Length: 255
Image (tube, rainbow, N blue to C red; front, side):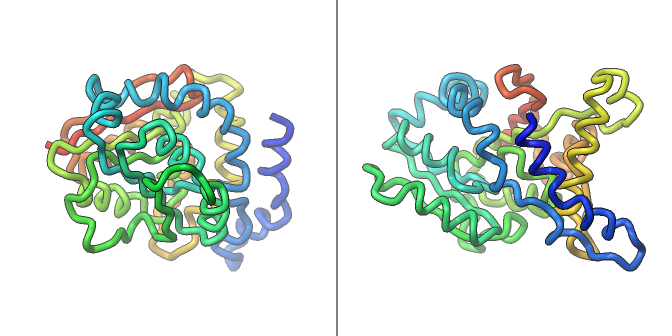
């Protein structure tokens, strides 16, 4: 926790500038998500295969193992999730994208020389996916990387577009109610910590354009559900994730 706090607090002086009316929009003042992803790597490594994959659907694990699925991870950072999935499911193909060039460089370094050829990393904006990807993927995942995007609404619409009919979208996000008072009631002092973390990192990242939604990590389940419906997802299930503390899983099917 102390190491995570130091990452968030590093840009304190620059954050103060953002609050000025004539201050910067914020992107350069924030610590990119891939820079602190190591804080969550151990937890996700332990539960990604054993808990997360089964939560996506009763037959997803079998399809990954036997038939093979074409999968996309948006906001892949340094490629931890993609690499672990590619290693465990050699019959499936995985593509990881991230808007940050540095993240993709690090992701490629992670997989360089690995004993599998079912893994690709590309630099790409999640709100502007490849035009040729319409109906390409069986499975799309996002791990805590939707809310920091400037136009998360456009990203979700792109996810719907690139999924095959009956495709599955699994989105892990920070849990929140979309209501500050309710968050305080449910979480107590931890609500203040989560909002503070969002202010120091997620809000600056998601505020770097004039049309940015600036959601922050506490955008909450009500707003997320509304945006998922607007993107075209009418079949959405919210699944608690005690193995990913502080998160919730949205499992969406493209009907």
